[in-house]
Amino acid sequence: MGHQYKAVQWNVAKIVYDLYCLAALAAFIGIFMTVGLAAHPSGHRADPVVLLIRALGTAAFLMLTIVLAIGPLARLSPRFNPMLYNRRHFGVMTFLVAAAHFGLATFWYHASGPLNPFVSLLVSNPLYQSAEGFPFEVFGLAAFAILFVMAATSHDYWLNNLSAPVWKALHMLVYAAFGLLVLHVAYGALMTEKSAIYPALTVAAFAIVAALHLWTGLRERRRDAGMRGVSASDGWIDVCAPADIPDKRAVIAPLPSGERVAIFRDGAKICAMTNACRHQNGPLGEGCIKDGAVTCPWHGWQYRPEDGVSPPPYTEKIATYDTRLSAGRVFVKVRPNAPGQRSQFIMMGAAP
Amino acid sequence: MRRFHRRLHLWMWIALAPLTAVGLALAIASVPKEQTNDLDGALISEAP
Image (cartoon, rainbow over all chains, first blue to last red; front, side, top):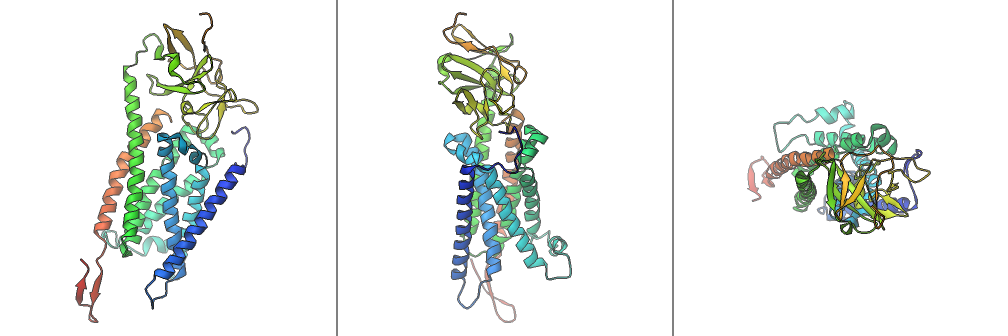
């Protein structure tokens, strides 16, 4: 949680995770190079630099595929939440691998001529009308530029200064980067590849990521559509029966505004707060109550259920909602309280 | 996520998925076939 800025938020778990990722990356590149050199037709010596460029590019593409699959998978099952917790480090690592691919390819193919390598990258192939010889480098360059912005603004410093909604919207550009990268691979590597493995892998990666995002996106839209029947004429909405809320967990309800509210039960106490975490607008209602505090499933940010204030030494605040019990049903007031304001909450078994 | 992000996410994928799929299909359909040529460059055989 962000009560002070640190250069990079590392802890033991993240260091171990990063080391595993680096080891897997090194193993991938090693295997790719070994197989590439061994599989080359006899009598033709494979160029190790070209193989390394391909290994780095393939690794970056696979890593971005994994990064983009984590979000929707976590929406479908909480078992993937630990991957979400470490996603930012993996994303920055993806950028660094892509940067190595970009740098090596640019200087290997474009540094020997009279032109500046970056100018040569843009002007050396003018076949924009040809599918077969299309300058696929422009797709890769555009994707790399987006990944650079993502990596440069990945720190919580930017998250705090841009605000979570702006930061989140900005980082959705990574989907465009993925589309551009698919085209970069399709019009580049696939044009000279004889094996069917590359096209199959590219199509599978794209299909899996697109299907996961469209599936979860449409599911969220269906949930939003379900809220239209809710009546809020008196400023309160009927959410559920108290027994519908599992202990230490929440029921998520849509508000007429389109936003969502999370109604938590902690023993006999029922409190409501916004479903959007202050950090990255993660779904608080999919988290649980730990040590008396609502804990976001994404990165573990915590808030007290009654007033939405983070436990000391943290100072973050989120909006709460008043709740009341009427005829055995939990009602939530549509209008939120100011962030950090103590809400009117339900104590089960207390006198009305 | 907030409603704005949920909508942005869905609409980005509704736009991106078909565009990328068409681009990918066009690329795969345009992959040059493997050819064998004689010394004068005349086509001897082409992979199916």
